Amino acid sequence: MTTFRYLPMTEQDRKEMLEEIGITSEEALFSDVPEKVRFKGTLNVERALSEPELIQEMTRLAKKNVNLKDTPSFLGAGVYDHYIPSVVDSIISRSEFYTAYTPYQPEISQGELQAIFEFQTMISELTAMEVANSSMYDGPTALAEAALLSCSSARKQKIIVSCAVHPESRLVLQTYAKGQHLEVVEIPTKDGTTDLEQLKEAIDQDTASVIVQYPNFFGQIEPLKEIEALTRQAKKAHFVVSCNPLSLGLLTPPGEFGADIVVGDCQPLGISQSFGGPHCGYFATTKKLMRKIPGRLVGETVDEDGKRGYVLTLQAREQHIRRDKATSNICSNQALNALASSVAMTALGKKGIRDIANQNIQKAHYAKDQLQKKGVTVLTKDSFFNEFVVDVKQPVKDVNQKLLEHGFIGGYELGREDETRKNQMLIAVTEQRTKTQIDQFATLLGGLIHE
Image (tube, rainbow, N blue to C red; front, side, top):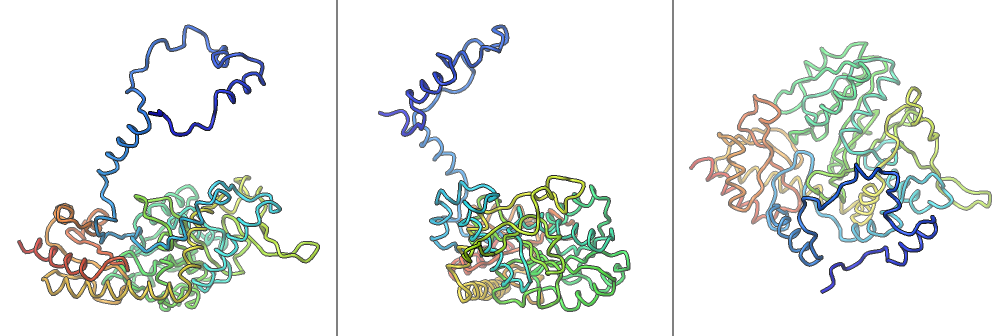
């Protein structure tokens, strides 16, 4: 039996490389290391496995993980189980994409640059903003970068953020703000959305930005029109919206409500959950703020023969290297995951994205109705996208363990972030969930609560 299936470096390759540098053995490479400090003997590690043995062992370990192919998931809170067209993996697996680095040399990077340009275009259309960058690391860092941009542009140091923004995004924002000596003010919620009265009181002439999430962390729809009007009470303050891009298949985009910056995470569009990452953030804004946009921006141009081409534009690389003058500490982007989102959006098209968004709304509301029929207390009263909050009357951790034993992944434990939400569960229902799965989940959860 062959021990290894494939080793790219042959013995002949090794021999030729050693001859090229003028030595006869690999041992000579370590000649500068004194003999007395070299390890002698055998390392106390397990023996090397053959390839078949290794595959068997890794398969055994992998089976310990709960996977979504066998277990329906009602867990969301920022990472969702959505349909990914099969063409996505086919495209992003091509070597010219998954091995590509930052396209500093446009003459040999036209394919990569065009893909990024199309990503920017589609994000701009979804959000109804004038310009979008090449992508960010993820949604939380995009949000924090938006806050920094607002402070530098407005020359103010007060950031107001709703407590209905994802708690992990708020933690990232706090980290960014501490290094820049910025003030972060959190506004509590009222009935699942931002408390507008407290927001109005918090906004003053020192405010650089107001940040909300749409749909918010609890799945509900924030009143962007009213929040935008309140934001304008502070001169030069920016209205920043963190948004699930899939929801924009149906919801009115933030750009139409006058948002200055729209950010979010592209995971719902063609990126697998992968146990939490990597993701891809997006950043869209107005032409007025275009030159302050963090990260990279790809533009379309023509060469001397009038042939269309793509280049990195508006910002020099040095802008991100010289820390004291940089607009951002983001100096790269998530090109491969941005490509995955681009392929997904292209494959689905406008109608497909709208249809999937509609399925999320319809199935989530159906699940809410079924849970109420089974005696589950639903706390979400107003409009929501694909997530809502229930009270399970007991520790969510215990309920989720019982759900898992019955073949379901339960919702997110809100008490982890907020003691006042003890025993509350955030349930996500995407287009992937079938009517049968929803009915079974509702019956099971209702039974567990009342047993």
